[in-house]
Image (cartoon, rainbow, N blue to C red; front, side, top):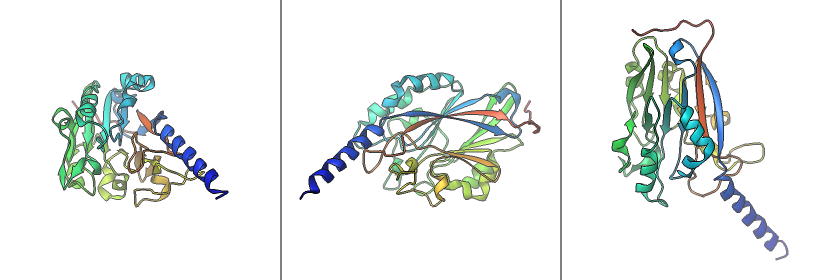
Amino acid sequence: MGGLVPGLLAGLGLFGWGVRESRWWRLVRYEVGISGLAPAFEGFTILHLSDLHGRVGVFSWPPFRAALARAHLVALTGDYFTLSLPRAQVAAALAALEAPYGVWAVSGNHDYHRGRLRLEPWRPRAAWLDNRAVAVERGGSRLWLAGIPDLVRGRARLAEVAAACTGPEPAVLLSHRPDVITRPEAARFALVLAGHTHGGQVTLPGGRALVRHTRLPAPYVAGRLEHGGTVLITSRGLGTSELPVRLGARPEVVEVRLYSKPGTEVANHA
C-alpha cells in the first residue's frame, strides 16, 4: 500500500497534464520549395488543419486568427466530428472558415459510419475534394489541388486523381493518411498534406510514439519528410481520440508557404 497512493497521485497528475497539453496549441510553419511553381504562386500560403475531432476552440486562438488572415487557401484533412460535441456547433465553426482561394476538405476514417460518409450538416457547405482535382488559378498560372478519401474506410482512386492533374503544373494532394506517400502515383504530387497519426498522441521521452497509426516507419509519424521528389507534411492534428490526452505531441495548426526552387522551369497557363 505504501507505493500505491503515490503511484495513483502520479498517474492522476500525468493524466491532468495530458488533458492540459491537449489544449496547448502551437503554430508550426514550413516553407516548401516546388519545382515549376509559377511566379504568381510565390509565397502562396496554405493553412492545414487535421483531426479536429470536434476541437474547434482553436478557431478563436489569436495566432490561429492571424494565420487564417494570412492564408490564401485552407486545407482540411479529415476527422472533423466527435460524439462529445454537438455536430451542429462544430459544423457552424467549420462553415465560418474562409480564405481567398477556398476551404477544401477530404474525409478521414472517423467521418464514416457503417461504411457511409457521415458529415452532415457541414458537408454540403464544404468544397469537397474526395477523388477530385481542381486547378487553382492565379495571375494566369495554375496550381493543381487534389484530394482522396480515407485510404481504409473510403474508396480512394489515387491513379484517377493523379491523372486528372493534366499538364506540367505542380500539384498538391490532400490525404487523411500519410501512407499514400508510398504509392507510385504519389510521385505526381510535389506536396502531400496528411494527418491521422496525431503525432502518436502519447509519446515516450525523446518523442517515440507508443502507437503510430501508420504502417510507415517512425519518422513519418509527424513533421516534414521528403519521399522521392515529394514533400510529405504530416500534421499532429488538433483533437484526440480514445483518450482526451496528449503527451509529447502538442496539437498543431500547420502553415505552409510555397516558393519556387531556383533554376526550375516554370509552367505557365494562359
